[in-house]
Image 1 (cartoon, chains in turn red, brown):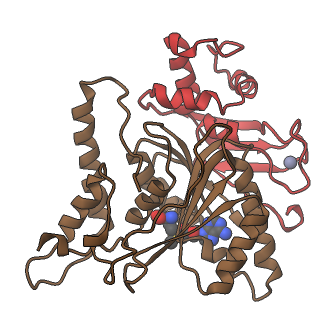
Image 2 (spheres, protein in one colour):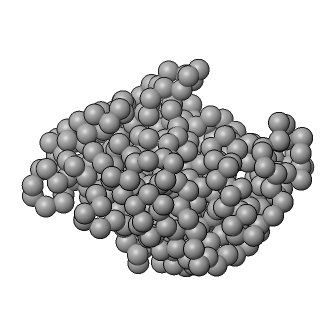
Length: 125
Length: 271
Ligand SMILES: C[S@@+](CC[C@H](N)C(=O)[O-])C[C@H]1O[C@@H](n2cnc3c(N)ncnc32)[C@H](O)[C@@H]1O
Ligand SMILES: [Zn+2]
């Protein structure tokens, strides 16, 4: 699972609706893998509008990934170094194993072979 | 005659391509898409071949394992869509789902259960989609009641849209695509339900079908499926077809590489 996808995920336990707590899910015991893919400016510009950039930089820092500025540059297109780093962090960094814990309700979603288990228990729906 | 060939879009990949076409994505946009019930990733591969990034959800670990082995590009998730989906608001540019939705309806015999699951599913889907985007479900409805139930739940969650039926007069080729619109973008075009294919033609034959001008792929597939005179037509094997598509993608890539690094591919359908 790419970091992009982690940035899109929030806890979906029915009663866990506080957006300040159900996102981002806290990464724990994480194993990462870097998978090279072709950089696509068009896609990145689209994703910049969707990504929660604060959550991304926080998560990146927790994982020891450096090189992302604190804020998105005003004209990202004119900043190839930023675009490349964003590409590497969002689309090339994959979580292969680990856990994602919700700060709201405590649910822990496990990630195995890159696939997060998002299934809920009966009492969580 | 050449145009007498009948094109029956039956493979999962072909239906995925049709669903993608029905999403009416903005031309040349590299989109972030959801594949609901992605299975082994055949439908997702169609999305990546068209230059999109995707996330696939499925309830079956063994299907996801197959997708993993096949090294699809999309991110995979173990998800029971009847429990709702775990995405932030507005992140996806569209969603497709091939041969999945009917499964949500037959949980137990009690109506309440499917209704609750459909409602949870559609409300979280509506939220996950960007305003003005679409979700297209190819499905096999069991009966009108089932369709009614699905439409009622979807409408209550804010969706508009309706059913597109391709080749309605052909037993073999008839396909249902539920096209749902997730609201209206602030300055976006008005959402309109696309036309079904082969609607006017009694045999659902290709003669009455308008393919979008840019869609050479469908025509090529058609040609491949054409048997000689008197020969029975063999269905296109989805695997062959995908290999073929990969070749095509490569060819396209080589051609466009000289133009610019990020030449957008044409993929907007014209109805
Ligand atoms: C006919 S397969 C489609 C596979 C894929 N869409 C493709 O075109 O290659 C249907 C898939 O729906 C999945 N499915 C059924 N019920 C589901 C649910 N409640 N949540 C998520 N996936 C489900 C099944 O596991 C199966 O992989
Ligand atoms: Zn939670």
